[in-house]
Length: 156
Image (cartoon, rainbow, N blue to C red; front, side, top):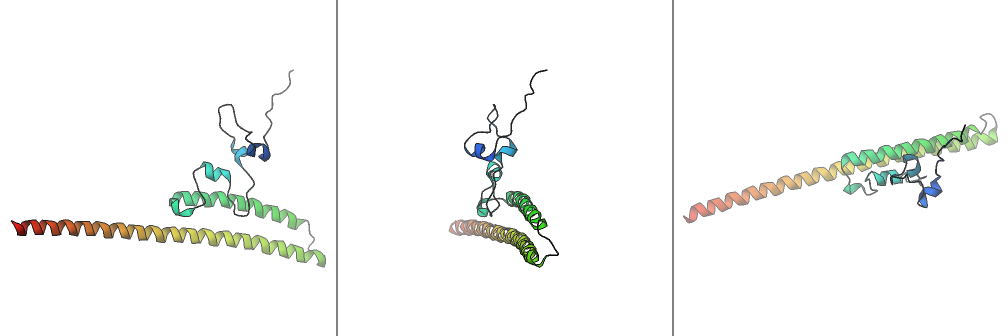
């Protein structure tokens, strides 16, 4: 039997250096994942056309970005849980560290929820304001047309 031709998975470092591409030029989804910072944003979001600037996104794209960030948040929280499991509940010296990790997990989750809620509210408020401006402008255009017609009929 011949040797198996198992494809080796490229590491994140190799992806950053430009490796990890298939012969057709596409990158694997696993290769595109890059450990994100605390902000929870990665290159997959950029590949989907999602920018960090929430003002230029549609509501759907904003929600997609939140889903990606939530996925990364779950990974971060699970890592913290694994760290917390290493500390005993019974030893007083380790209880404080466990409590600290638990507080950190809850804080990260709350910050994420608050930020997402705030971004959606800001988007909705901006969208509502833009829609009101469009309606007001359309009303002004209609009124201007009516005024012009009245002036034309008065001049005749």
